[in-house]
Length: 298
Ligand code: NDP
Ligand code: 8X3
Image (cartoon, rainbow, N blue to C red; front, side):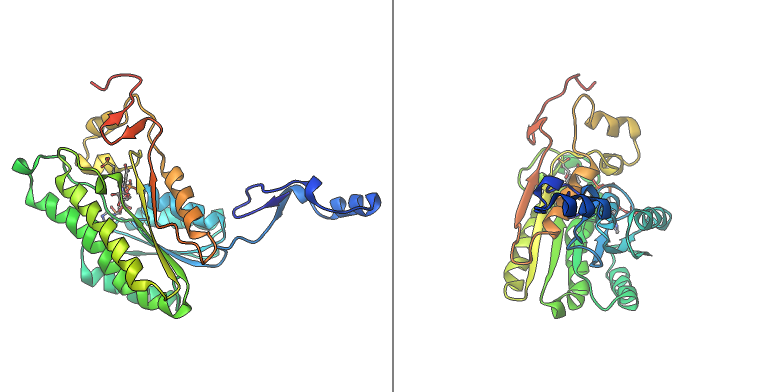
């Protein structure tokens, strides 16, 4: 059976045209046609993922690793990055390197890019994933530190990392930039003013960058998820595990693996295909304010 990318079935032994029954038997003896793998288009591609220490970024690292891609991983929590890199190598990544990265700091981003150059002269796929929400206060009660962190990471972080890594992508005249936005960038909600503004910023940066890079061979996509259970709410509520758990109570949110699968799918389209914008929500979330709960959250 043919499988690709990543070993998914796309055919069966019956699709192999071998008219002679003896030759057919010999063929099947020599080849386990159920596990015949076509090489993935992502094999040995260099994939750079920001925010790879947890959630979507960590899951994407593993998903790309299963495709045989080589990884460059960045985030602030190096112990977590180390564990993700180890798991990625076990999952099939020829190389999985990591380095501390704070996307809120130009100096850190530039130092990270310098380190990338010591590992590889080229980056094929850039996943701008680092970010998140801080607080759920209405504007009237908003905290400067929360506002600044959200804008620094979700908006300026995408800009800084893209600016620093583009020189490693442009010479190939091919490559993929995937920014992780949110449905919050498309629809506002109470307490989300700055997070929604930040993700709306990410969306417009993605659109502008696609225009700027038209003709270079690089494609730019945004993947905009709805409710997904990661460390997102734990970070938003500053470590309050009970409050974070309530966000997902009684409903079936997306998982990090769901988003990782979409990221890999977008990155593995043929080079002439650009998936501009992808919105992915849980079936239980028909709209940002319409979330079905089997049990009422208290
Ligand atoms: P997590 O909190 O699990 O992951 C966030 C990642 O971003 C971590 O790896 C964290 O690493 C990293 N990060 C945060 N700040 C920085 C920084 N200053 N520098 C470098 N890395 C940073 O949440 P998710 O996986 O859910 O979030 C990933 C992205 O998806 C975010 O952009 C988020 O806004 C977006 N998103 C999430 C949704 C959800 O419901 N979960 C829905 C839609 C979008 P570290 O702390 O180690 O630096
Ligand atoms: C995360 C989705 O709806 O919690 O970006 O803001 S939401």
